[in-house]
Image 1 (cartoon, one colour):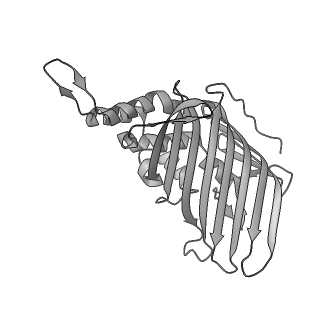
Image 2 (cartoon, one colour):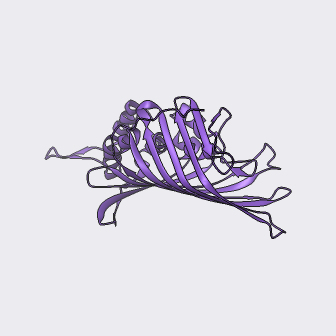
Image 3 (tube, one colour):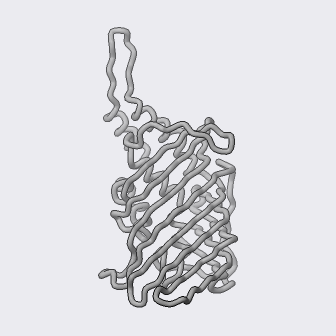
Length: 273
């Protein structure tokens, strides 16, 4: 939701009761969302870097069936002002199992995805050590393998911030918690892609290259006392495949981003092909 539109919605939804004393009452959920919208979410739209952990599980009942597990660990640098992201997954392990047989294929390597403007560059040592530029629509699982370009789309912090903002005051009030000695406030959001991005057509189109429009996304945002996002967690489960799903798979996606260097410039350049 655009910032101006969000302000209009907040003004319309605020429950204001003025008593004889002249004091103004504002609904706590509206107040909490206003603070989240103005002080917290902009941090996801500014340059930063994050430690990243991603787990993907895909199960296909097609013929022949297969199961795939992928575990990825690394870092992500984000420069929204530059329309750029550098996802550097230094540790990637994928395991493909074909049911009804004992055959199991385990591959280990690294993956790096650089998005710069409208171009996406991928180097996946599980397949090749060379860089290539991706022009096709991103997916999560393609040709029975993980598509890292789809993964970087799912971790796009500006898109995730828009999902949270699109929920409005229904985000509710945060829950106090602690982690690594830090006092944090935790927000939880559950919505579908189409629901939370209905006011952001460009981001909705990007998200639907990976997710079905009715895919349910669970987001957890942990914020410190300086209103900096420390942890961003994403979970979802959805089907992917061709139109009649004869070559479909059920995908379970789970990611955790631990954010650092809030607001510091992240210079990202295109690799040499």
